[in-house]
Length: 224
Image (cartoon, rainbow, N blue to C red; front, side, top):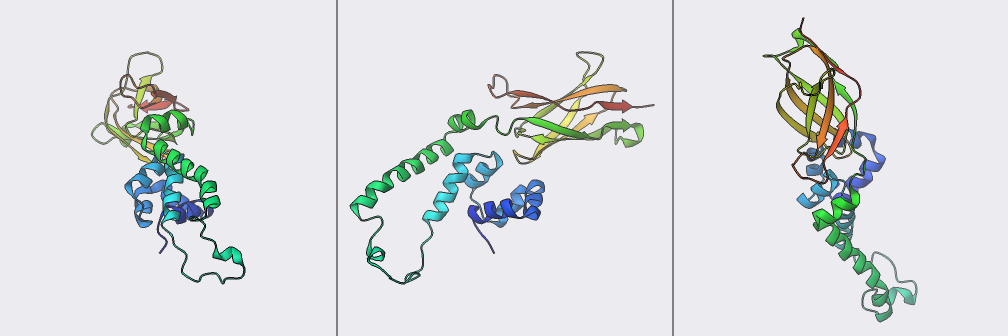
């Protein structure tokens, strides 16, 4: 069994089956690799500093078995962290490690640097057309697929020929990852018509990260 963030990243880069499972069930995949809560958060938000820090921490915890390499020259007799010259050479690496830790633990710093990367975008919605037979107690589930949806993202469904007629949203949640986001909304279909759909990412009032994302196409409600 492979454990840790390094094997997971390697598998995500080289195994399309792992990528598909990660897109559908990120929490289950990360649990299988026994990632910490901080490492999970870094992957959910694509926090580059947090991901790099997890890799460095895992490397720092690894020890080569004794006598892994035969002694073939005097170079093998050096203590890489005890020698004064190599210790001085290591200083930039230490500063880099601490900078990563600072960025990973500072929400404002990381989000300001990384957002909006990937660019907030909606790719498609399903269904595109809703009829009476598709409703359950007058409601249906609208699925919007895209990237960079915040965990509290919401959708706004406005009639095409008006500015203020909106369909009520009864419940919604975001699943997936920052790179592969899915917003699931339970919508009450109370009027026929053609509707434009937007995703509001980071909807909290006053948030400087709030983004309005247009969903391609038109949602058609046909209650005849």
